[in-house]
Amino acid sequence: MKIRTTRALRRCAVSCAGLAALAACGSGGGSVSSGPAGRASFEGRGPITYVAGADNTGTVQAVLDRWNKLHPREKATFVQLPTDPDAQRQQMIQNAATRSDAFTVLSVDVVWNSEFAAHRWVDRLPETGFPLRRMLKPIVTTGMYRGGLYSVPASSDGGMLYYRTDLLKQAGVGQPPTTWAELKADCAKVRRLPAAKGMSCYAGQFQKYEGLTVNFAEAVNSAGGVVTDAQGRPHLDSPEAGKGLDFLVDSFKDGTIAKEAATYQEEDARRAFQSGKLVFERQWPYMYPLAAKKDGSSKVAGRFAVAPLPGLNGPGASSLGGHNLALWASAKNKATALDFIRFFTSQETQRFTLAYAPAAPTYQALYQDPGLVRKYPYLPTLKESILHAVPRPRVFGYGDVTAAVQREAFAAITGAKSSASALRDLQRDLRQQTAGK
Image 1 (cartoon, rainbow, N blue to C red):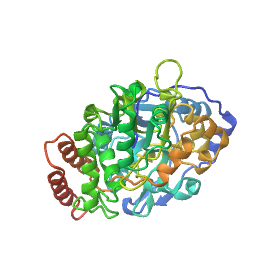
Image 2: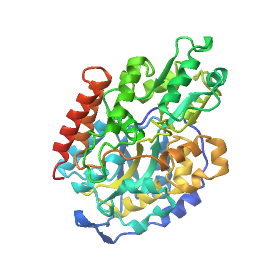
Image 3: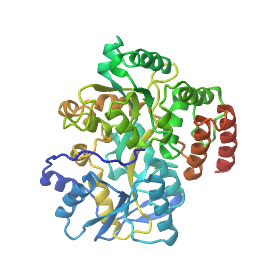
């Protein structure tokens, strides 16, 4: 789940001929069986809308401009929603309640897929119309619901550990930590250095919002537990879940996690790392090119690298993030919409958008391209993060589930509740919310 943030704009050339060939691959209509949601008819051509969170990078408009140049009679208009994912989801739900056709193609957080499909807000899509076998398997599963495809991956995301290579080297630490114990020990060595005076050890995103659900789930998963199983049943009463939350709570208490991190969203944590205030940070790939900029905006340019997230007894597990494209059930011009989804999610378009917004591509080949790896050295680590990532709860009422997780996890890390009490209450709440669904 990547929450959109300011990223660097760069130029990238992709031939219009190549993109025209991509657009020509789309079918012009027909219908498919849509399982739980009945049958969808993909008919009609004409203008469409693309609905997503506000984009300050220029990425979306750049792609839409290319589409519109090739399809002057089927232009796509960008409908920008708030940057906050909870607010995006709420506006989409409000639109569903009125059965408005103002939305056509939606950019949905991967954790919304099951809810949107179950409510029949989006259509089931023809799997044969998309090159899913060329994508990383964990990413493809985010668009599936009860055996059907309801959204097509446009970008993925995986958390990584950003660390200060210069300070670890000065402290005599040869490799980044792979366990929580190593992270704490390495940080203690670094903080004894004069160059690290006033620095904090570690930060993630711990404000009471979706980022806290991500960081909490990663702690539980990295301790060997799960928040919910494949059937949506909660397992917060396990010893592993307790160890995961205890790591966060204890780290706030002993100063391993910066006290300010309880107020951090993505950009807060990014600015803290780039300004030289942190030794380690859990962050998405979008930060890499920003932290590497040598225009004076980053104090750590040339002095950091990335590694897999650490866990209890070895490398941890990231939450699987990303955004997929779905087709609004009440939309018009669905034949055009299908072609647009193919265009927007194509390998060629993802290669193009890497230069604008370094989210995780969905295609295996892009991680193996020597030229891209030289340009974006975080790609190999990011691929491993995604291959070992764990989805956030795939449940019918995700909004209620994530709200409960945020409430109880925040109470624990801020000391309002003990870890045991927070997990007990969370287990009860999630069991009630997911019962019979």
